Figure 1 (cartoon, rainbow, N blue to C red):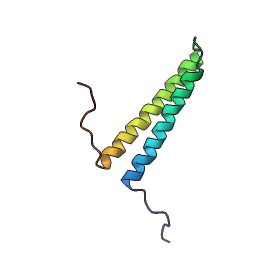
Figure 2 (figure 1 turned 180 degrees about the vertical axis):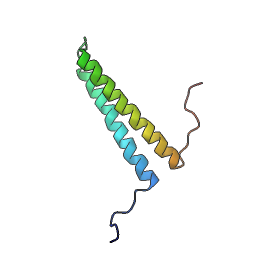
Figure 3 (figure 1 turned 90 degrees about the vertical axis):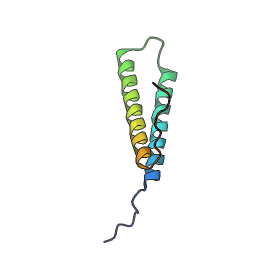
Length: 78
């Protein structure tokens, strides 16, 4: 039986990961809008988890973009 869903191309992978990264960034923003002035240990743990998710998706997006030929040698930095 032939698979009826075509495989995802590299550009679609980058778009999908960019959207996921955007959603993760929005989750960080939403957290920062509601976090109290004196964060609890639970708030700190939640923030750490949100940042880790955002960073992981950014890394995946960058790797996928590289695989799709969207290599950027360096952005800022030393």
